[in-house]
Image (cartoon, rainbow, N blue to C red; front, side):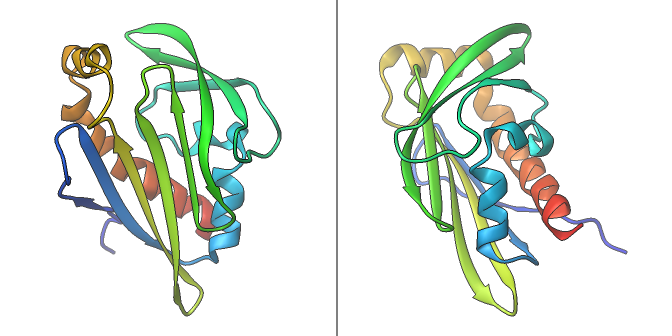
Amino acid sequence: MSKVRAEILSPEFPNMAAARITINAPASAIFELLANPRSHQLFDGSGTIQANIEGPERLYLGATFTMKMKIRIGYKIKNTVTEFEESKRITWRHLMRWTWSYQLVEIGNGQTEVTETFDAHSVPAFSTWWIARTGAMKYNPTNIAKSLVRLKAMCEA
């Protein structure tokens, strides 16, 4: 049996990373996990999400949610949903202004193509400095791919 992998995509700009995977589930079922901030820790391939602290049961455009995170040290981060198209797309950003997006496209036969994108190509200078300082772009493509593989396993279980 071959190992399940997500396809790491070539970025359009510096400070962008993306990966794609096909999941044997309808977009609506996958979107329910993405729209529930309490589920994010379960499919996080980076291991940085420690817990959901506060936010709605289900996200919506303009919703905010706070996560307990850990990258070397623990911290809290408040996110705001900036794009929300039911069963098709959800995007959120935080204080540093970079975004995390999930785009879902039903491709037939009960399958959905899911693309996750980290986008920090047009953020303020401090955010760009932080990305360079933490080495995020070295790890983000692989961590995104790991997240998608975990999401696939959850949706197909």
